[in-house]
Length: 230
Image (cartoon, rainbow, N blue to C red; front, top):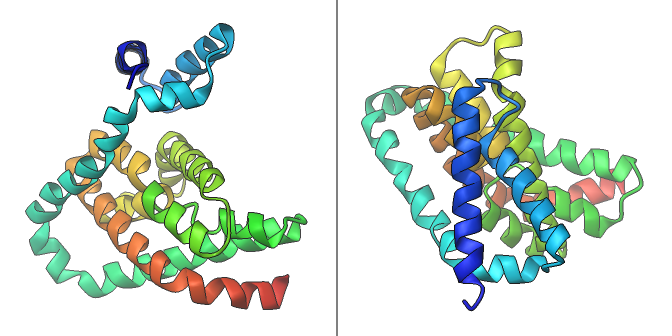
């Protein structure tokens, strides 16, 4: 934690500046996380500070990720009446979405010449980071690269997800939330919650369900995909 004295303030200040910019310029591409990364990365490169030092100094913030995910249970509880009424549809949507995310990512990787190790790394890209890293490791992938894939999927979903939903005229809050949570996990859920509380609740629900489905099915689905496509 010797680097916490500069790493923590740098992260917090960069994010607050990014939030302020995002509030002033209401464009989806100006995502606070994306802007904060654009601030922090050049600083690390210019000062020749290794990422490992920056990450170690920000351990406290990283540890807050798990309670932050648990906190998403509150909007779920408040939407419980709707969830009970539509639970069959919700489970079906999350199941189809999870299978589609795993199959499409793995198939595209293999068709582009990726090794089985890289294909296993990409497979859990659409679930939250701890689950993705655990699934990747169980499939003999590279958990660190899986975390990067998760970050990319989350940023893309947070930036372009609502644009695509508007383009295809998807107006139902529950449908929009399930789609975002299915494809772009916690980062997309945070963006959905900023736009609409109910949408954020369904997104957090999809995040949890898709994480469970992926962790259960990936060990069985990956060998089948390798047999058919490898």
